[in-house]
Length: 165
Image (cartoon, rainbow, N blue to C red):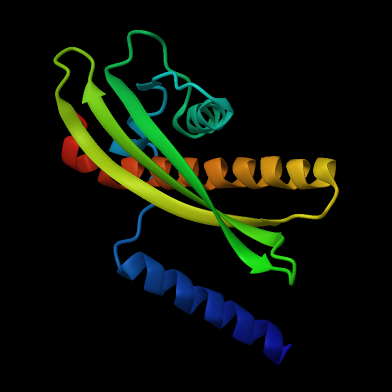
């Protein structure tokens, strides 16, 4: 019974501490970030990674129609770096680095309202077999673009009070 009470006291103390610091959910009803859901049209980008990044951004920012007040454009760059090298100089572990530079513009004026870039890294293992290595690489690319999309969506939500009207 004493442990049960301690847990309640700890939860209450943590709850009071968080509320005392001014913390508010970013997508709480009435916030700028929640009002932006479905208001940012995401530009098309060539390539599978660009398509997946756009799709993930739409999932997180909401689907916008062609009349949305904002347009998001981005440039995605990925590079690979071998991490683990065998004695015969074959790579068995590869880092996949990604950088997404993005810009949010007002549709009516074309004015840049927010611009930033995000970076992330993931890794995958390779074998002498071609198919499993290709699948691991594709999976790493998918994980990378999902992480980058999450970072972009968070930056937009966090800064939206400064630029969204």
